[in-house]
Image 1: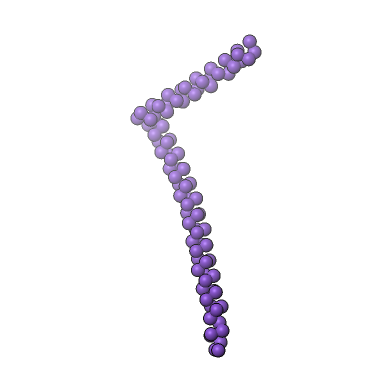
Image 2 (image 1 turned 30 degrees about the vertical axis):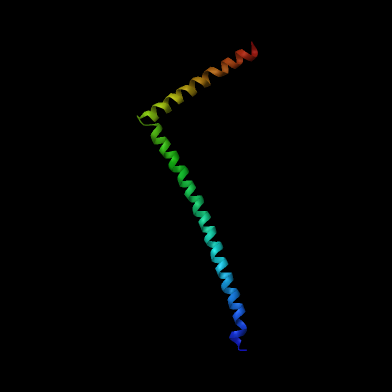
Length: 87
């Protein structure tokens, strides 16, 4: 047997390990890109909501009404609860 024939199993194992390493690194990079993509989606949604809520369209009007309702609710509930519990 020549020296190259003796090294062939080691070379085959090294090639297999290199392939496994490349697949693992590809998977890690793909998961990082997925996390980054989700971050862009969240920020894009938040920015779109903000633009729509401040606009003059029907969504802006609904958003403004919801804000007024929550302000009224926040102002009316505490006195009602004090009246309900204490009196």
